[in-house]
Length: 336
Image 1 (cartoon, rainbow, N blue to C red):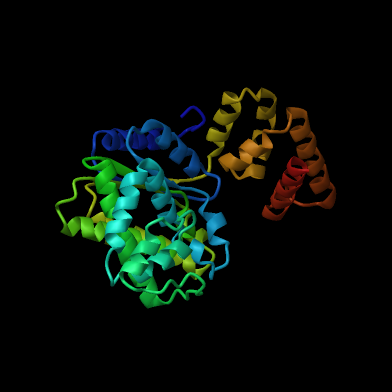
Image 2: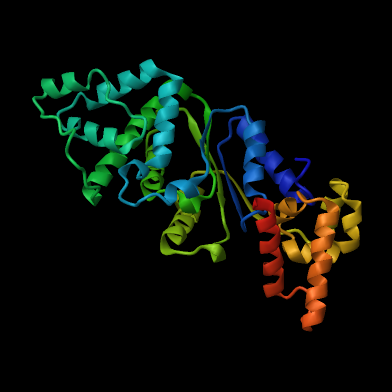
């Protein structure tokens, strides 16, 4: 973790969690912090360091911003899991689904799943099952995801995933990584809760499930959906299931850490403008990294220009409004 400056405590905790994961102990790692403080960096470090099966759900924000009525996004994380399991063992995948849907009460759910899950292609045996139960295909029907259908889907998918995990990863510790839990769709969250509840009740499953979850600070959450996901996952639903819970709160750099970062990057000339640079970036590692993509002389020129402007206008140096103005100036120059 070379770039993880001034995080000795966090580094120690994460390395301990990695040791537990690799030794077969199921844990939950919860990393919280403002945007840009290094949550995703930590997740990438863990993913490189573990030697256990991993299911990733990254860039959740892109999924969340899709249309709410888009059924393909209702179970987006679960779809990722199903796709991975299909690639892992196509034969086991097809056999599991065939055996599950070889039932008069479940066959009608098949086409709903086909509609909901991206990459879930019509399987060659699906027509045979429809014929066997004398059920008419509803391929052209538009499905409305009401509460009843959603509950049936959650039960169905949780059972399928549990059996596929058993066939592919029996006796393993499986890690589910969710980057920014607030963007995750509720259907996937409820499905994971159902899986965990069944694992508690049914001792016959030998595999274990661990979680690595990141989230923005609760004070950054903008709407009720984000808040619901945050508090739902942080609640006791998972706590009682895990002996080892690792909870980290990442914050922006103090000025000493900003100085250490500049030294690490060998940007010695910028040390003369340490306070200004720290104020501009708010000590945020991501903003600091973006700023350092400029040459030293460019950064110094912008800082001096800004300081001259504030002197002439009689403003105090680096009020929050002026800092924001300079941040936007840096960002615009970086993009264009």
